[in-house]
Image 1 (cartoon, chains in turn cyan, blue):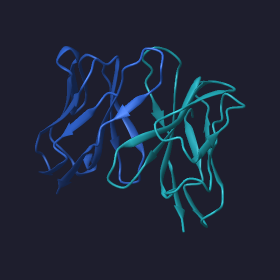
Image 2 (image 1 turned 90 degrees about the vertical axis):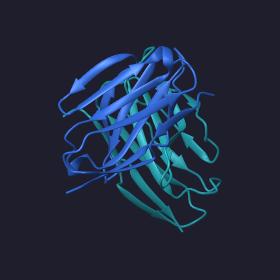
Image 3 (image 1 turned 30 degrees about the vertical axis):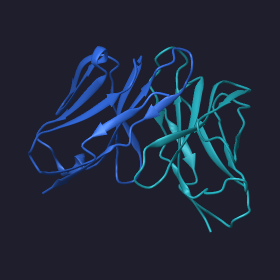
Image 4 (image 1 turned 60 degrees about the vertical axis):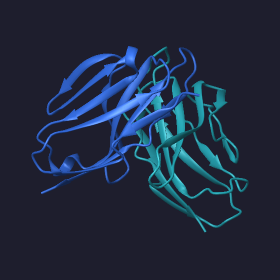
Length: 113
Length: 110
């Protein structure tokens, strides 16, 4: 089955630790995205990548880092510099082009205490 | 940047009722999607509809791009329709900056 997988589903960390969230897709999509969702809110774009070895900051990139070494994978690191890291993180992918349709993974709920 | 509004913010329906959800956006767009977020957080694609009308079973959507709004219709609602409905738009032809609305929370009561 083609799709987007995110792991783990739930993640708990102590304050001050970096943590990496996994996102893998087998849809052969060129573009991948990371979003953050806070309770009762919409989604906000953290980073996106249109092609391997290239990525761009979204609206709320501070305190996050990404890499895109493979087409299928776009891991997100939440660093200790992120002031409010507890949130629901969603990964998405799409084909490249002018009007791509996005598809989402199941998300990772990160709790930092 | 582009602003996206959704209305109503909350909606409570009895099973079997019909509803209309609205998405307004502040500038022209070339990409608009409707999503349903289920209680487990999964975002499910409903429609990719930058313009025109589409139907899928009990759901249909219409986007009037020139007037900068889109409507999502749910007919004969079921309890499984409960969740949050988001619209997301994108303006730039070659950028990848999708903007999400705040969502409409729908509760369908048995």
